[in-house]
Length: 169
Ligand code: NI
Image 1 (cartoon, rainbow, N blue to C red):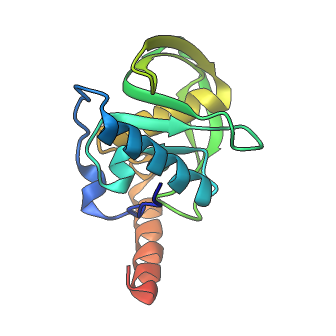
Image 2: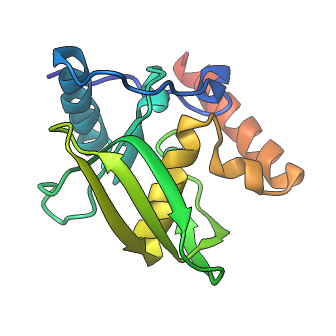
């Protein structure tokens, strides 16, 4: 396994769109293992392939205390199940250090392939529903900061650009 570099806002590569996975071969399985290692090392609970500069429709999630309940979503399709908005402080490994409340549907149905290639359907609610929507947005090149005011987004961009200059990222 290998730890991958996580792209950080405002890196333009985060705007690339993930392509559908046609075949779950060894390369995809290795990518998923590397993504899991990367997410756990960064203490995150969700990571999309586009965040590690791989344009494939794959994201992973794990909200367990012991980092041992990895969920893998390949070619996910999301359907909101209610209008009722949910509000959770949303963060992102590509926007480190910033958390904002966004409005998103509180329940969603996800259809995807698991890491074994078998299709599954599962409902998510609350924080987990927010997470799957957040990760799925990454596959379309969208970031949570897009939903903030321009003022807030510019402030975050400037702070991160300054940090990137200091760390030569
Ligand atoms: Ni994110």
